[in-house]
Length: 357
Ligand code: TXA
Ligand code: MG
Image (cartoon, rainbow, N blue to C red; front, side):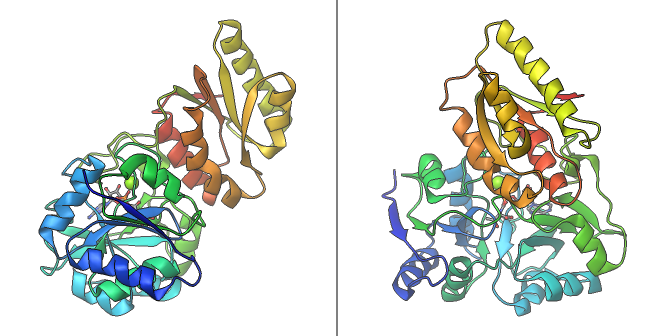
């Protein structure tokens, strides 16, 4: 058991004292949870093997699932990676700092513990003032996975971090709710052609525009299958699932939304007639239809503003278990832009328990 401190920080103008206290812990090999523009991360000095091992322990993370290294400044790219291709520089110059992670060849500077022994390393330059300030004052790259217990939805508030990691880490910097609410877009630039490993806040269409070429989207990046370790480590693990069974109802297309909601309603009614208590996670456009029929509804946001849906996603998945229901049904979203990111998370959370209507 570790004594966990929680310090409030202003997310826009973090106080020097909070950042220095956190950086001191990092320098001494401790663990600090901190907000980023995507989700909260659980950070340790990436150059300190023992500290990095403690991240895996605190999260119950399988040892073969590599971590992202967080940097502050483009000059770090050439230090933690080698043979950096032109595409990486182009993305870094246009989109960093920001929610996109590059997978490149690892340099010898970074210990193998960070990448689970792999020759490749995932690198991200976050744009959140607290994350940037912490990395800068620590003076080292910070290895940081999302600050949740392995398998749980990623934390978008300090409360979520407290639920999962209190007593396991030295410090939580509480900077309020994160902006995007879903983890960074990950793109692998080590192959012949760029490959999307995980969709995130930066839509793959934007990356394609920056690079001027198509990016391959494997099935596992859509959340449709499990990836082998060799292909993409960590994409094979159970993710985001609430304890309550979750059923995802996808549409072939979402053009006629009232027809779609009728189909969702029909399925929900069938479960209810068998005696199940059901909650429906739904868009603003359709949620009232279910509420009018007496279903509990968690509203995710508008179909016209998928940023809102993404931001509410993990919080809503965490909320399901406290409702005392037997089953959660969640609506699907069109797989364009941020919709791909949302569907990746929902298919994983539902563990392929999906119906296409
Ligand atoms: O937005 C984010 O990316 C957040 C914040 C804290 O920065 N971090 C995050 O880390 O989501 P994590 O560990 O929860 O997810 C990172 C994913 C994992 O699925 C991991 O397997 C993959 O990135 N990954 C890390 N290093 C890799 C590598 N060398 N090759 C392929 N995949 C890698
Ligand atoms: Mg994670």
